[in-house]
Image 1 (tube, helix red, strand yellow):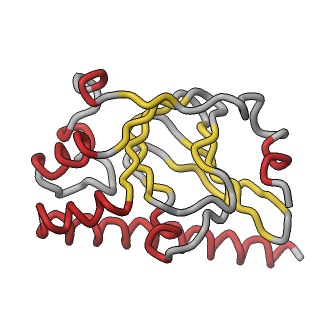
Image 2 (cartoon, one colour; image 1 turned 180 degrees about the horizontal axis):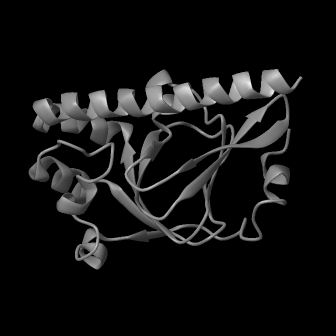
Length: 178
């Protein structure tokens, strides 16, 4: 399997990397109050969200940029702060669009928590701002803001349950067409 062959249909920007940006560059538009409106940061305290923004990795992705590739280490997860991603699941050397990840949602938590490699390719659907929460920062959130860590873990579980519900329904729809 060659990971990059799957991108030819999705992106002419395979050689382009996302741009690492600083919180001060986007603070007017992306801040704790804004992120509290998304599913992953809902009900978190503003200081805990600020902690993630200041200590996480913020990226600006252009349409078609590769966020992560199939088979790479699941070393953290990404929260969409602005924009949208597409996720292409890889299975048996076949790559198919699986879902969209919109504002306030995450991608990559499952691989991180399962200590597994990425199971597909995440691509910016349009210009997007992402907050990467590496595993080490997730652990530090637990130490510094234990209550908020619990809330975020619940939010992540709820988000995974929604995705599982949708994919389960899609599976039934496909089986009805066979």
